[in-house]
Each structure stands twice: as structure tokens, then as C-alpha cells.
Amino acid sequence: MTMIIETSSWGKMEVQEDHIVQFHRGIPGFEEETAFAILPYENSPFHMMQSVQEPGLSFLLADPFLFEPQYEFELPQHEAAELQIDEEVNVLCIVTIGESLSDSSINLLAPIVINPINRQGKQIVLHDTAYVTRHKLSELSAAEQLFAKEGE
Image (cartoon, rainbow, N blue to C red; front, side, top):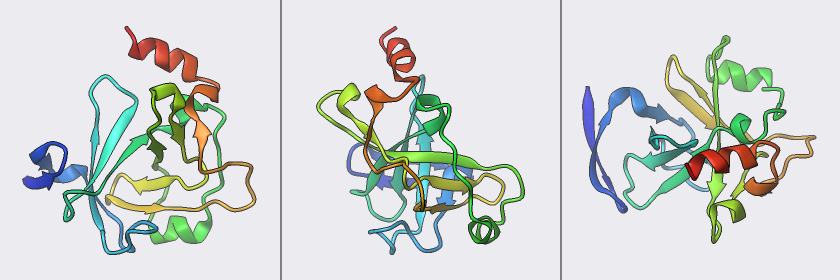
């Protein structure tokens, strides 16, 4: 099943229902926005997370493991229970665009965790970690290889 959503950048878009993720409490700073379409950019490590209700609200996301293969965190049990996660989980992080792709940063402190089975998601702020909200993409271990692929 598909639905039409309105976006500021791309106008009306047809989105498959299985690309919609429900955030029961929204995401920090946007608690009223509870449904987002997560759409991959073709031939890219990036995704767009577009609010289903608010055309002007979208985020650029990336798979953090592509940029930092050693990225790891312990998902608190209560968070896993809230999202009904048994084993399979998707993790994406918000990217802040700089003047160039290499000047952009990724928020490894607050990953977006998604249960791909029930399409429930939550942005989880990690505690007791060295991760911060703005890791420069160009300084992460796998960035050079990814940027080389982007230029091909």
C-alpha cells in the first residue's frame, strides 16, 4: 500500500507504507511528529527521514557502521522492550550538512533505533559514552573509502 506525502524539497511523493516508521513519542525537539518516511538515497550511504505530517521537517540519516565500523553501544533493555526488539534492529544517525560532504558531521550520541519488523522507532540518547553529537564524517575510519565511492 502507498501513501502520498508532501515535502518542501521534492513536492508530493508516493511512499510505500513499509517505509513509514512510527515514533510514539516523536523525536527530541519534535515530540508531536510521530510518523516519518525513511527513504534511501539511491547509490548512497544516506537516507532521508521525512515527517509524514509536516512538509518542512526532514533529516538526513546515515548508517553509522559504514562510516565507523567499530561503532557500538549497548541498547538498554527497557528501550529494546519498548520497541519490542528481539534480535533484528536497524540503526541510523542524523547527519548535519556542512559546506561540503567532508565538513558534515554525524550524531553518534543519539542514534535512531528501528525495529524493522513492527516499524517502531526511537531516537535514543546514549549515556556514559565517548560519542558526541558532531563527529566529522571525514575523520571517521571508513569515510575515505566511502567518499571515494561517491566520486565514482
